[in-house]
Image (spheres, rainbow, N blue to C red):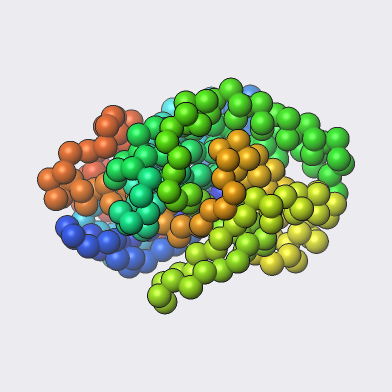
Length: 336
């Protein structure tokens, strides 16, 4: 699949078979920084569109080189919410022959929940899922393979950093307080139905934002030789918000778990994480290494096994296509 996010275009190739989890074959990322190249009117700049075209072109060539049978290209909130979204997707299709789809934020939440269920298993019971992306926050809860309720809110770490925090660091207390009020206001208005759901047996978080915060403030847990999850407590996270605010980007990047590329947005991510854990009454959660991409793959495998799709169907995601039938992809590979 080709996943166009707010910071990168991520090609993920996996072997799929009914009754088995996705087996990764290859993974490749190219930075595009779409969010940074989006103005306050929501328009993605032409230079970022050219970067997107180049990254999708290279991803298609790599997919051909690995002889993939199916290609699933989709964009998440950074492109989905852009005011020139249709023009951007049109340019990608004109240049590569690949029709990139997008799904609503609620569908992202449903499929990310599907991934968490696949990773945790049925013994996790009823799950509450939290996922902080670059452009949006997804929350979902339920006791089944798919959630009973899912929401997507415009509280992504990158979006909030660009729109609500000053460019310079350290960040003043008044700016931190203003962002906290904004985040809590949005959560308070939009999570009443979620809070009315039965209490979850397991609270789980996906995304790089939660993973890095858990490495910063949490503790790793043994997991039978698999990628080690981390436990993150709300009380452990709280003191790090003022500490992150008091540091420059360079100083944040030297902290455990915080990468240089995400140092600037780490403060907003911590503010959202703390606020959503408070509003949803989560004292402690576990990080999950699977996310949206694995959810899409598991959903596809469910189709191979004859299971009905998650309601509602992904009407905005393009039908899975034989890559050899996508117009122009062979020429793209040859040119690359």
